Length: 81
View 1: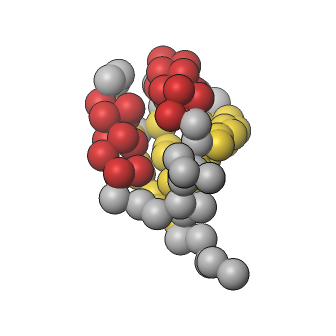
View 2 (view 1 turned 120 degrees about the vertical axis):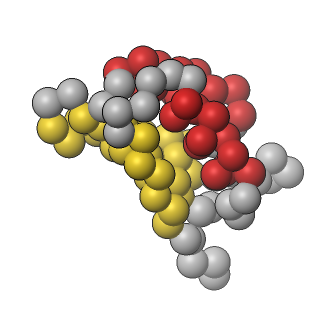
């Protein structure tokens, strides 16, 4: 059984497309079933990241952790599964 690794990405005070670019680069270095936790305060990041993650086939969810602050959870999926 594989234990998933958690990676964190702080994108506070960064406007689009910077959070998406950082997430993409970070996910490239991660293994399948690893979890990327992004923190952002730009709601455009939610829209852009959701759209991109769906196209890539990864799993994701997000929650608002404070007024105008979100955590986005992205589980990397192996494209060969």
